Length: 384
Image (cartoon, rainbow, N blue to C red; front, side, top):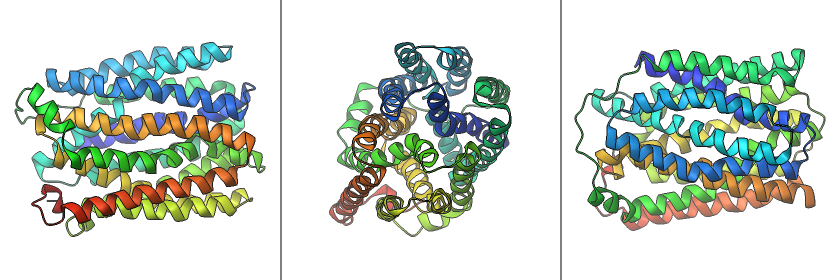
């Protein structure tokens, strides 16, 4: 558990660079919101295929650790191409290659964490908690440092983090529980499960505005007069606010059905995006990032646990990577490309209002599924 927690802490520094500062880096290189939206969308396009692919490979080999180590090495080298490409076309190609190898790392490690939590009877959130702490530290520290030394040194920061993550990942251990080999029957059972497929649809509606905000928040704040330090502070507030919720959510999951929790997160997202649509002060955006605690934190922990309960154990890595491909892949493609375009043509306020509608639809789907299946014996109705 210590190694998994340490890896989450440091690897989320790398995620902070990608989520919070690469959009600013692209802006520094002279790209507009529309171009940045396209660049941020092509990576998740690849992730839709790469995350399930590496999930299947990991399930078949039953050695997630070895796959993660290989992905980290390749990520280190492909990141250099991303940061130092000079034209829009080269940046797009580099982003695609980079995401093919980086995007599966988080869901694969989450599959290790959820398997460990099931094997040892501990809370998954107590492991993932350290990722939030790491992201918070990184957002503040990197934002402050980049404000001093400049965005041109961002790759050196990122590469150092990946090297540290690799060293820690080499100490991880795979689940000791022997799993049945992945089969065509298990794959069909997963993809024909309406509880899993319906969940993915609901997550997609919630993810579209969420991933748009991840890509465009920094650009929006800069437009309102914020500095890199302010952007880093906004991400730090979101991470700090989510950490205690992630650590303690398992207490709620024992009493509240997971689909209900995911629906509740969609309801809070609806409120959050309506608030963002009404603000024109970056300080208010920074404060409102604290709503990450009742939106993303609930959505992420409940979703990972939900997947672990509705897919066969031998399909765990595949099920988690497909969920992540839907959330961070397809959701980001639509959110970043359409969101970036609409932000240029209309306004950020319009985009966030539309995002509130999408989140509300996702909430309704979750509640409808819960009502439909509540009288059937559902494994996810209780969490150990």
